[in-house]
Image (cartoon, rainbow, N blue to C red; front, side, top):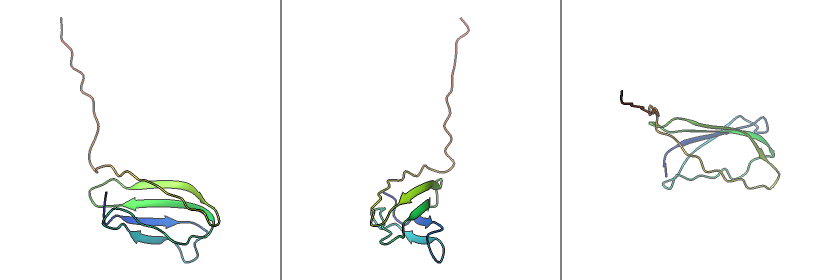
Length: 86
């Protein structure tokens, strides 16, 4: 649950450019009315790597739910392999 995340949805179908909202205290939001089209979703929050998803197809009267997982920024995954010389 990440409250205060900046969520931007963009599409050539959106007149006036991308729509931007901020998640609520439960980390949720809803874009109530979007025209049919293909959308790109971007989510940003300080301290986390940005989330980006393309080619979201939204039809007329459709409801589309997304659960986005933001990874901590600056965290690198590594594996250390140690061996013995015997």
